[in-house]
Image 1 (tube, rainbow, N blue to C red):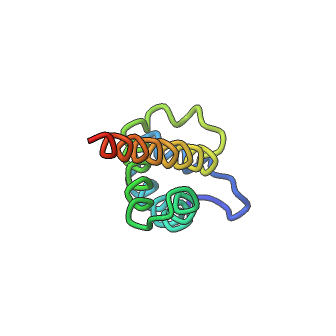
Image 2: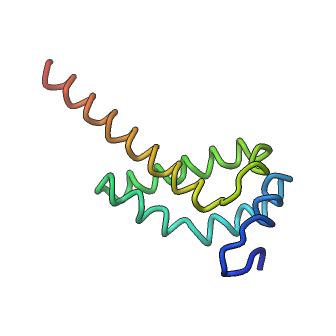
Length: 102
């Protein structure tokens, strides 16, 4: 176990920041379903919500070196999911408006 269930994610955040792929896998397995549910509350489409969450995990790994500055990894990921879900909705609405004009 990388962190206590009380919510202390500092250790695991440091491990991911150092490039520990096992710590990253642990976070993925621990939070993927919850983050998908959270994204679904915005998007209302399960496969699109899963795509948003996968994108969050990709960005998280790509920017892992800067994670040491993050105090709460779960809150950080939830903010990313929220923002990307809202961006997805905006893009979808813009696409629908463009189709209507055609």
